[in-house]
Amino acid sequence: MKLFDNAHSAMLSAIELFNKPRITYRNEVTVILVVNAWELALKGLLRRRRIRVFKKKQRGRAYESISLDQCLELVRNRKLWPPTLDGSAVAVNIQGLQEFRNRAIHLYNADGLGTVVYSYLQQTVLNFRDFLVAVGGKDIAEAITWDLLPLGSTTPAEAVQFMRVDSDARAVPAINDFLEELRKGIESVEQAGGDTGRIYTYYDVNLHNKKQASAADLSVAVNQDADGKAVTHTYDPNTGHPLNATALLAKVNGKRKSGRKLSAYDRDAAVWFDKLKEDKRYAWKHDTALSHVYSNETASYLAGKDDAHFDEARKHYKSRNRPTA
Image (cartoon, one colour):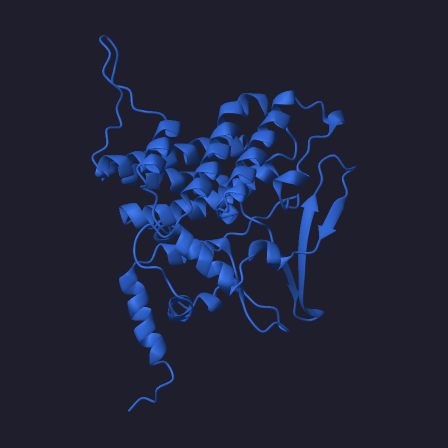
Protein backbone atom coordinates (compact mmCIF):
# COMPACT_ATOMS: atom_id res chain seq x y z
CA MET A 1 0.00 0.00 0.00
CA LYS A 2 1.28 3.44 -0.97
CA LEU A 3 0.45 4.95 2.44
CA PHE A 4 2.70 2.42 4.18
CA ASP A 5 5.44 3.06 1.62
CA ASN A 6 5.26 6.81 2.23
CA ALA A 7 5.21 6.33 6.00
CA HIS A 8 8.28 4.12 5.70
CA SER A 9 10.06 6.77 3.62
CA ALA A 10 9.13 9.61 5.98
CA MET A 11 10.54 7.79 9.01
CA LEU A 12 13.75 6.90 7.20
CA SER A 13 14.14 10.53 6.15
CA ALA A 14 13.66 11.64 9.76
CA ILE A 15 16.32 9.22 11.02
CA GLU A 16 18.78 10.22 8.31
CA LEU A 17 18.24 13.92 8.95
CA PHE A 18 18.54 13.65 12.73
CA ASN A 19 21.85 11.79 12.48
CA LYS A 20 23.54 14.43 10.34
CA PRO A 21 26.43 15.83 12.43
CA ARG A 22 25.81 19.48 11.54
CA ILE A 23 22.28 20.73 11.00
CA THR A 24 20.22 23.52 12.50
CA TYR A 25 16.55 23.17 13.46
CA ARG A 26 17.21 19.43 13.85
CA ASN A 27 14.55 18.53 16.42
CA GLU A 28 11.78 20.54 14.81
CA VAL A 29 12.24 19.17 11.29
CA THR A 30 12.74 15.61 12.56
CA VAL A 31 9.58 15.72 14.64
CA ILE A 32 7.57 17.06 11.69
CA LEU A 33 8.68 14.09 9.58
CA VAL A 34 8.09 11.58 12.38
CA VAL A 35 4.57 12.83 13.07
CA ASN A 36 3.88 12.73 9.33
CA ALA A 37 5.15 9.13 9.21
CA TRP A 38 2.78 8.10 11.98
CA GLU A 39 -0.21 9.82 10.39
CA LEU A 40 0.43 8.08 7.07
CA ALA A 41 0.93 4.69 8.75
CA LEU A 42 -2.25 4.99 10.82
CA LYS A 43 -4.24 6.04 7.76
CA GLY A 44 -2.80 3.08 5.92
CA LEU A 45 -4.10 0.78 8.66
CA LEU A 46 -7.54 2.41 8.57
CA ARG A 47 -7.75 2.18 4.78
CA ARG A 48 -6.74 -1.49 4.92
CA ARG A 49 -9.67 -2.06 7.27
CA ARG A 50 -11.92 -0.14 4.85
CA ILE A 51 -12.43 2.75 7.27
CA ARG A 52 -12.90 6.14 5.64
CA VAL A 53 -10.02 8.60 6.18
CA PHE A 54 -11.49 11.53 4.22
CA LYS A 55 -13.86 14.12 5.55
CA LYS A 56 -17.13 14.83 3.79
CA LYS A 57 -16.44 16.79 0.61
CA GLN A 58 -17.34 20.46 0.82
CA ARG A 59 -18.30 22.36 -2.31
CA GLY A 60 -15.50 24.49 -3.71
CA ARG A 61 -12.83 22.88 -1.50
CA ALA A 62 -10.38 20.07 -2.08
CA TYR A 63 -10.78 16.74 -0.32
CA GLU A 64 -9.46 16.83 3.26
CA SER A 65 -8.35 13.84 5.29
CA ILE A 66 -8.96 13.34 9.00
CA SER A 67 -6.44 14.55 11.57
CA LEU A 68 -3.84 12.52 13.44
CA ASP A 69 -5.90 12.75 16.63
CA GLN A 70 -8.92 11.39 14.77
CA CYS A 71 -6.78 8.54 13.42
CA LEU A 72 -5.62 7.64 16.93
CA GLU A 73 -9.19 7.75 18.20
CA LEU A 74 -10.42 5.45 15.44
CA VAL A 75 -7.58 2.97 15.94
CA ARG A 76 -8.29 2.91 19.67
CA ASN A 77 -12.07 2.61 19.39
CA ARG A 78 -11.88 -0.09 16.70
CA LYS A 79 -9.20 -1.94 18.72
CA LEU A 80 -6.81 -1.98 15.76
CA TRP A 81 -3.51 -1.65 17.62
CA PRO A 82 -1.32 -4.74 17.07
CA PRO A 83 -1.55 -6.96 20.17
CA THR A 84 2.23 -6.75 20.68
CA LEU A 85 1.98 -3.00 21.28
CA ASP A 86 0.40 -1.13 24.18
CA GLY A 87 -1.69 1.21 22.05
CA SER A 88 -2.43 3.72 24.81
CA ALA A 89 1.28 4.16 25.55
CA VAL A 90 2.24 4.42 21.87
CA ALA A 91 -0.49 7.05 21.41
CA VAL A 92 0.89 9.10 24.32
CA ASN A 93 4.33 8.99 22.69
CA ILE A 94 2.90 10.18 19.36
CA GLN A 95 0.81 12.90 20.98
CA GLY A 96 3.83 14.17 22.90
CA LEU A 97 5.75 14.59 19.65
CA GLN A 98 2.72 16.16 18.00
CA GLU A 99 2.49 18.65 20.85
CA PHE A 100 6.15 19.57 20.34
CA ARG A 101 5.52 20.06 16.64
CA ASN A 102 2.50 22.27 17.30
CA ARG A 103 4.42 24.40 19.80
CA ALA A 104 7.70 24.50 17.88
CA ILE A 105 7.33 28.15 17.06
CA HIS A 106 7.36 28.93 20.79
CA LEU A 107 10.19 26.57 21.72
CA TYR A 108 12.98 27.83 19.51
CA ASN A 109 14.97 29.11 22.52
CA ALA A 110 14.29 26.21 24.90
CA ASP A 111 17.82 25.16 25.75
CA GLY A 112 18.02 21.60 27.03
CA LEU A 113 14.56 20.54 25.85
CA GLY A 114 16.17 18.51 23.08
CA THR A 115 17.05 15.77 25.57
CA VAL A 116 13.36 15.17 26.27
CA VAL A 117 12.49 15.24 22.58
CA TYR A 118 15.31 12.81 21.83
CA SER A 119 13.99 10.28 24.35
CA TYR A 120 10.57 10.43 22.71
CA LEU A 121 12.03 10.21 19.20
CA GLN A 122 14.22 7.21 20.02
CA GLN A 123 11.28 5.29 21.43
CA THR A 124 8.94 6.29 18.61
CA VAL A 125 11.35 4.76 16.07
CA LEU A 126 11.17 1.44 17.92
CA ASN A 127 7.38 1.69 18.22
CA PHE A 128 7.04 2.58 14.55
CA ARG A 129 9.19 -0.32 13.46
CA ASP A 130 7.10 -2.81 15.47
CA PHE A 131 3.86 -1.23 14.23
CA LEU A 132 4.79 -1.22 10.55
CA VAL A 133 6.09 -4.80 10.68
CA ALA A 134 2.82 -5.93 12.27
CA VAL A 135 0.37 -4.09 10.01
CA GLY A 136 2.29 -3.30 6.84
CA GLY A 137 4.92 -6.01 6.56
CA LYS A 138 7.72 -3.46 6.10
CA ASP A 139 10.75 -3.33 8.40
CA ILE A 140 12.74 -0.09 8.48
CA ALA A 141 15.60 -2.03 10.08
CA GLU A 142 16.31 -3.55 6.70
CA ALA A 143 16.93 -0.14 5.15
CA ILE A 144 19.28 1.52 7.66
CA THR A 145 22.34 0.89 9.77
CA TRP A 146 21.44 0.66 13.44
CA ASP A 147 24.91 1.02 14.96
CA LEU A 148 24.75 4.83 15.08
CA LEU A 149 26.00 6.48 18.26
CA PRO A 150 23.98 9.35 19.77
CA LEU A 151 27.12 11.38 20.52
CA GLY A 152 26.67 14.94 21.68
CA SER A 153 27.94 17.66 23.98
CA THR A 154 25.20 17.09 26.57
CA THR A 155 24.23 14.02 28.54
CA PRO A 156 20.76 12.57 27.82
CA ALA A 157 18.20 13.03 30.58
CA GLU A 158 16.75 10.10 32.48
CA ALA A 159 13.12 11.11 32.69
CA VAL A 160 10.72 13.96 32.08
CA GLN A 161 10.29 14.91 35.71
CA PHE A 162 13.91 16.08 35.77
CA MET A 163 13.31 18.50 32.91
CA ARG A 164 12.17 21.74 34.52
CA VAL A 165 12.87 25.07 32.92
CA ASP A 166 15.16 27.44 34.78
CA SER A 167 13.28 30.64 35.60
CA ASP A 168 16.42 32.59 34.73
CA ALA A 169 16.59 31.13 31.23
CA ARG A 170 13.99 33.59 29.87
CA ALA A 171 11.93 30.66 28.63
CA VAL A 172 8.38 31.27 27.54
CA PRO A 173 5.53 29.84 29.66
CA ALA A 174 4.57 27.53 26.78
CA ILE A 175 7.60 25.36 27.60
CA ASN A 176 6.32 24.57 31.08
CA ASP A 177 2.89 23.86 29.62
CA PHE A 178 4.45 21.49 27.11
CA LEU A 179 6.32 19.55 29.79
CA GLU A 180 3.19 19.37 31.90
CA GLU A 181 1.33 17.81 28.95
CA LEU A 182 4.06 15.17 28.66
CA ARG A 183 3.80 14.36 32.38
CA LYS A 184 0.02 14.02 32.16
CA GLY A 185 0.36 11.57 29.28
CA ILE A 186 2.85 9.42 31.18
CA GLU A 187 0.74 9.49 34.35
CA SER A 188 -2.36 8.38 32.42
CA VAL A 189 -0.55 5.29 31.16
CA GLU A 190 0.95 4.58 34.60
CA GLN A 191 -2.45 4.78 36.28
CA ALA A 192 -3.91 2.40 33.70
CA GLY A 193 -1.06 -0.07 34.29
CA GLY A 194 0.14 0.33 30.72
CA ASP A 195 3.59 -0.12 29.24
CA THR A 196 5.31 3.22 29.91
CA GLY A 197 8.41 1.84 28.20
CA ARG A 198 6.61 2.56 24.92
CA ILE A 199 6.50 6.31 25.67
CA TYR A 200 10.12 7.32 25.96
CA THR A 201 13.51 5.67 26.09
CA TYR A 202 15.14 5.32 29.50
CA TYR A 203 18.85 5.97 29.18
CA ASP A 204 21.13 3.35 30.66
CA VAL A 205 24.67 4.40 29.75
CA ASN A 206 27.29 1.67 29.93
CA LEU A 207 30.93 2.68 30.18
CA HIS A 208 33.50 0.03 29.30
CA ASN A 209 37.28 0.21 29.51
CA LYS A 210 38.90 -3.20 29.19
CA LYS A 211 42.25 -1.99 30.52
CA GLN A 212 40.98 -0.25 33.65
CA ALA A 213 37.63 -1.77 34.55
CA SER A 214 35.42 -4.64 33.53
CA ALA A 215 32.17 -2.67 33.48
CA ALA A 216 30.47 0.27 35.12
CA ASP A 217 26.83 1.22 34.86
CA LEU A 218 25.98 4.85 35.03
CA SER A 219 22.67 6.59 34.51
CA VAL A 220 22.82 10.35 34.49
CA ALA A 221 19.95 12.76 34.86
CA VAL A 222 20.35 16.45 34.18
CA ASN A 223 18.22 18.83 36.21
CA GLN A 224 17.63 21.93 34.15
CA ASP A 225 16.94 24.20 37.13
CA ALA A 226 20.24 23.27 38.78
CA ASP A 227 23.37 25.28 38.13
CA GLY A 228 24.66 23.11 35.32
CA LYS A 229 25.56 20.17 37.53
CA ALA A 230 24.94 16.54 36.61
CA VAL A 231 23.22 14.33 39.16
CA THR A 232 24.12 10.64 39.18
CA HIS A 233 21.27 8.23 39.67
CA THR A 234 21.50 4.49 40.20
CA TYR A 235 19.24 2.57 37.87
CA ASP A 236 16.64 0.45 39.65
CA PRO A 237 15.62 -2.53 37.49
CA ASN A 238 12.51 -2.90 39.63
CA THR A 239 11.19 0.22 37.94
CA GLY A 240 11.61 -1.17 34.45
CA HIS A 241 10.70 -4.75 35.42
CA PRO A 242 8.02 -4.45 38.13
CA LEU A 243 6.26 -7.79 37.58
CA ASN A 244 7.02 -11.07 39.30
CA ALA A 245 5.80 -14.27 37.65
CA THR A 246 2.40 -14.16 39.39
CA ALA A 247 1.78 -10.52 38.53
CA LEU A 248 2.89 -11.17 34.95
CA LEU A 249 0.33 -13.95 34.49
CA ALA A 250 -2.46 -11.82 35.96
CA LYS A 251 -1.62 -8.92 33.68
CA VAL A 252 -1.39 -11.12 30.58
CA ASN A 253 -4.80 -12.65 31.28
CA GLY A 254 -6.23 -9.18 31.89
CA LYS A 255 -4.87 -7.86 28.57
CA ARG A 256 -5.83 -10.80 26.34
CA LYS A 257 -8.76 -10.00 24.08
CA SER A 258 -9.66 -13.59 23.27
CA GLY A 259 -8.71 -17.18 24.06
CA ARG A 260 -8.61 -19.29 27.16
CA LYS A 261 -7.46 -18.18 30.59
CA LEU A 262 -3.76 -18.97 30.76
CA SER A 263 -2.20 -21.02 33.51
CA ALA A 264 1.18 -20.69 35.18
CA TYR A 265 2.34 -23.57 32.99
CA ASP A 266 1.30 -21.65 29.88
CA ARG A 267 3.29 -18.65 31.10
CA ASP A 268 6.42 -20.65 31.90
CA ALA A 269 6.24 -22.53 28.63
CA ALA A 270 5.90 -19.38 26.54
CA VAL A 271 8.67 -17.55 28.41
CA TRP A 272 10.98 -20.51 27.76
CA PHE A 273 9.81 -21.14 24.19
CA ASP A 274 10.20 -17.49 23.15
CA LYS A 275 13.52 -17.13 25.02
CA LEU A 276 12.25 -14.06 26.86
CA LYS A 277 14.70 -14.52 29.73
CA GLU A 278 17.53 -13.97 27.28
CA ASP A 279 16.29 -10.48 26.40
CA LYS A 280 16.69 -7.76 29.03
CA ARG A 281 13.76 -5.85 27.57
CA TYR A 282 11.50 -8.61 28.86
CA ALA A 283 13.20 -10.22 31.86
CA TRP A 284 15.86 -9.44 34.44
CA LYS A 285 17.35 -11.33 37.38
CA HIS A 286 19.80 -10.14 39.98
CA ASP A 287 22.80 -12.40 40.42
CA THR A 288 21.69 -13.32 43.95
CA ALA A 289 17.98 -13.69 43.17
CA LEU A 290 16.20 -16.99 42.64
CA SER A 291 13.78 -15.87 39.98
CA HIS A 292 13.32 -13.36 37.17
CA VAL A 293 11.17 -10.25 37.13
CA TYR A 294 9.43 -8.99 34.01
CA SER A 295 8.62 -5.73 32.25
CA ASN A 296 5.20 -4.45 31.18
CA GLU A 297 6.38 -5.03 27.62
CA THR A 298 6.53 -8.75 28.41
CA ALA A 299 2.87 -8.71 29.36
CA SER A 300 1.98 -6.96 26.09
CA TYR A 301 4.07 -9.44 24.13
CA LEU A 302 2.49 -12.53 25.68
CA ALA A 303 -1.02 -11.06 25.56
CA GLY A 304 -0.63 -10.77 21.80
CA LYS A 305 -0.10 -14.51 21.35
CA ASP A 306 -3.04 -16.75 20.51
CA ASP A 307 -3.93 -20.09 22.09
CA ALA A 308 -2.18 -22.00 19.30
CA HIS A 309 1.12 -20.34 20.20
CA PHE A 310 0.77 -21.35 23.85
CA ASP A 311 -0.19 -24.90 22.81
CA GLU A 312 2.97 -25.10 20.69
CA ALA A 313 5.05 -23.70 23.55
CA ARG A 314 3.60 -26.26 25.99
CA LYS A 315 4.41 -29.11 23.61
CA HIS A 316 8.06 -28.11 23.28
CA TYR A 317 8.38 -27.15 26.94
CA LYS A 318 7.13 -30.58 28.02
CA SER A 319 9.73 -32.39 25.89
CA ARG A 320 12.63 -29.99 26.53
CA ASN A 321 14.56 -32.39 28.78
CA ARG A 322 13.89 -35.57 26.83
CA PRO A 323 17.04 -37.12 25.35
CA THR A 324 17.23 -37.04 21.58
CA ALA A 325 17.77 -40.25 19.62
